[in-house]
Each structure stands twice: as structure tokens, then as C-alpha cells.
Length: 121
Image (tube, rainbow, N blue to C red):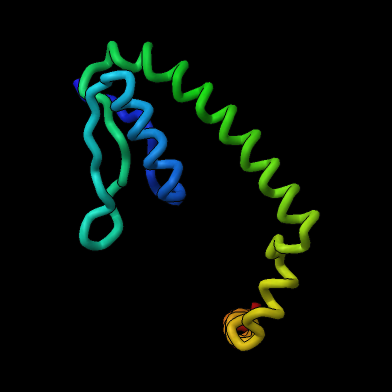
């Protein structure tokens, strides 16, 4: 019976490629599902055999540990170099987008409160 191994929703492409390579390197059979035409299905990597999970899980855990260390180091390096894009830097890069989203949120809040008071609550 197939078993879910790795959910691909929101995963960077390089990480998904690394997981595929890890499984292929250790000759673990797997298949993938995509998110479908409307994006409602679950994109994931599935193992064909449940027994393979005992081999794949420790390999994957080690990979995740190493990736976390590398990504933290990359984050610190970008932050030191001033290239890290935080909230304010992203806002300054795209001020119109920020204003449009902010205006839309204010409009939704206004309409919600207005209708609440019109109902007498």
C-alpha cells in the first residue's frame, strides 16, 4: 500500500528535487502526485512500499537537519550583506501593491463593521 512521504505544497523546487534525488540514490521506489487542474489535490511524493519508510525516514530526517543548517546560514549571510528582503524592504520595493492590499483590507473591515451596525448589533 502506498504511503505519503513528503507533501510538496509550498515546497521550494530545489528542496523537492533534493528529496527526489535522495530517494533515487538509495533506490527507493516512489511516485508523485500533482495539485491537479484546479490546485485542490495534494501534490506529494508517495512511497510504493510501506517497508521503504523505515529506510527513507532516517535519510530524510538527516537531509532536513542539514538543509535547516544551510538555510539558516544563508539567511544570516543575506542579512549581514543587507540583501535580506524583510517586510519593510519588500514594501518599499512594491509600494503600489502594498497600498492596494492595505486599501482592500480596510474596505473589507469597513464593510463588515458597517453591516454589523446596520443590523443593530
